[in-house]
Length: 500
Image (cartoon, rainbow, N blue to C red):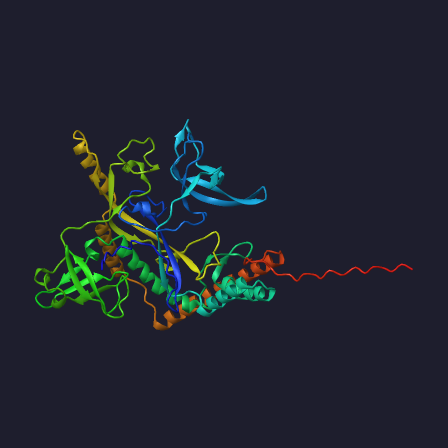
């Protein structure tokens, strides 16, 4: 069994274990070569990965490649972001049109076209917009909504889908209101857009607090075991000597407790027994038994490999001044030069609100027809890259290429130096005299803060309910698909009048 720590396949579990819900995790990244701009993480960024992403419908926020029928268009073949989706009716059919914003538009005749509007996905059989799929990971984890509310909604939807009666529709609307009105951000027509956390003091806050703690840890493990899987910190390590050798490694996704797993350590296969109860991607230490490693046991030495094979990464865009090509605007975002090769030397998660490692993806609409429901999470990652090689080095410019590589890597900020700086700052802050509060003052301050948070949460909930009510009075009603069944009116038989 192979134990590559990188998550190399994206799959969707059919059913999660009891008490769990399904999350789809996507990533956005920024690098030291691209400034503060965030980009969708796609399979094109990882040449070593083989990601299976199913085709799906386009939506705002997606990265696409623009290939218009006019091949002389200055932005032909360029990458753009979908900003707006519009529905228009043509000859009785609804056609989706998209507004696009180009990330790095071309200049032609001293003009730059940054945006185009009302572009169809295809026209006359020619594809104009092609989706660039994001890298995604499906994960079953703790729920942020009480499971009984989820189960009641799914059961009501299943019943209504099988028999479209008015009674079942009313039951579905009731169950949908319990789910979406309390735990989702709603649009102008009361349609759910994406999940949101409730405020302190509201129903479900304790459940969501436990979910945040669990998902926070799982996201950290995913980042460590994917972006940093080839670094020394996360490679398998052999510890001890003689008959007391142990192996420290990250547990692969398909490993099962109580079964043997084979781990590759410096080119040597090591067989170890997985402890029962261990979870995937956990960093565990287990004894290496001689009976499972008769041929290689004496050759196993403690320590990690001196060689460190960092993960290759192809950034979508970098700032022009870091490329080997000539650009008039050195601050412009452009594609890397053909001869540049990048490696990941460090990765850190960009914290969201309340110090979370993730946030709910802000979708234009939520798919409430899935069974099980899929909840989208978004993780922002700060990648530290280095240029490791310039392909096609000319003999005359060999030394200049090496110098350019040194300059590019020097300005990126070494992660180890940044950690040392943070430690020095934290040590300095400890030496500064701080105002001390008594235990009673601290309790009083905490109670006031909790009271204010609950007050703000109740105010937000009241405003949300008022908005829902106003939309209902305006006739903006949430739809669930299906057709309403209406009783057919019996035709009255015409009676012929007798002639006298």
